[in-house]
Amino acid sequence: MKDLYVRGVRGVRSGLEQVGLLDPLDRWAARSDAGAWTRSLLAVYDLHDLIALDVPWWTYEAAGKVARFLASRDDARVLEWGSGASSVWLARRAGSVTSIEHDPEWAAEIAPVLPSNAQVIAVPPTLASQSSEPIRSAKKGFEGLDFRDYVEAIDRQHGDFDLVVVDGRAREACLARAIERVVPGGMIVVDNVERARYRAAIARLGTRVTVDWTSGLTPSLPYPTRTALLRPEA
Image 1 (tube, one colour):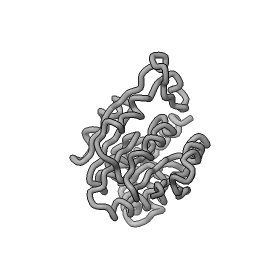
Image 2 (cartoon, rainbow, N blue to C red; image 1 turned 90 degrees about the horizontal axis):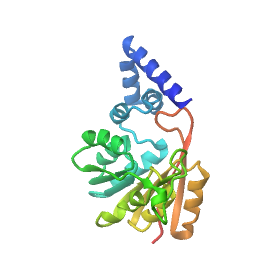
Image 3 (cartoon, one colour; image 1 turned 120 degrees about the horizontal axis):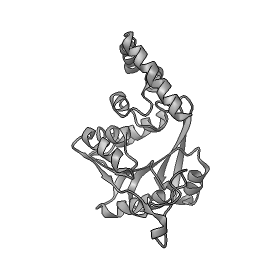
């Protein structure tokens, strides 16, 4: 179903471009939030289109709050699990961005479009059967894989981070690592918290964090989603 939807959207986009209606949509997107979201619907799973629109794949509410947070900090250091258009968006607003990506092919596609202050590191999973204590992903199709190296990639980065984005695989385990590496006054972004397992992972942090639950429209999606912004308690 998803593949059919994406192909259909791309067909519509191609048709609008052929008849000269894509440029007016781009101009509307540049001056209006409604226009930006409408135009983004034509950019679903299109890396270069989303980069041109300058949007991360979180709720618009969360993106606005993260942008203001980064604007308040000089040379902010960012780490994210899961790379994409958000990597470029973050790099335009932060001092440095390190993206941990589980898919080497996707990392190879991302690397050429990143600004000079950003890098993507490919850390593919291994077979869970080869580990005595695998870290698994609950996403369908990844059940037999171990994401321990991917989760622990943050341990191979020096220093702490102003912002950590949890938007890839094994997010529950990534969140548990992130809370240990964000600076006082920093922020953690956890996307797609409409999923119960992510809300449960946040709940396990208890009073260690305050949570801003954002919800609403999200770039390129015709339905609302939820993104949580966590602020560690001092």
